[in-house]
Length: 270
Image (cartoon, rainbow, N blue to C red):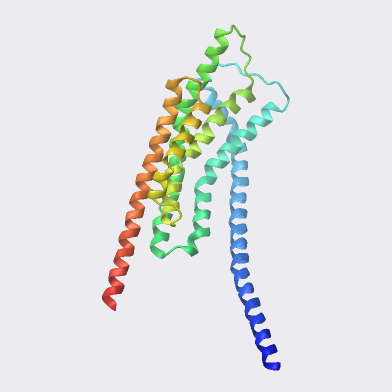
């Protein structure tokens, strides 16, 4: 009787220890994630402060560029000026936070990566800012003017007198710029996910139809409803996806080659 009780007690202790050992890594991961999120929030707050300081020069610069040059903007509320300051501050904070956020995400998954994977993935961090700037340039110099001139043309055809609010103008602009700029991070995201073995080119090729649909949908939503404008956005996004698949294939081939090399070394050592 005593032996069976001891055995049951031992099994209960083992189960409790297993549960405890399973919970500890979970709590450690949650604690690490919380720390990374706090760091990112601190950088975003600092970015907002910097953004508020340089919001006015950035606003003046954009008002001197096409298509805003010579355009008379109006305030329909006492809060419009403050709202624009905050929008500019947010965009500037986002710009400053992107490389730091990429580093924090890398630092969070770093313990799960092998040394060679750590070296391979950290190389993506500087390119996060570069790709965002490329997307920002494309959306500002190509997509935004198309959408802006189309809407004005429609108003002119309807003999409408334009009274453009400052909030409406910049909200319209940022609603185009920010999503497209973030989409230009797609190749880096896919390469990173491939490097940590979450995605692979085979899976991406199977998702091609869904990806094409999403890219065309985005092109239709953010541009005027005509074929030329839609194509000018959708086609570059589709090309971006295909480039992402190719880059994923490059990373995947290197992973397979490294795995084969390790197997050969292990077989030779037996």
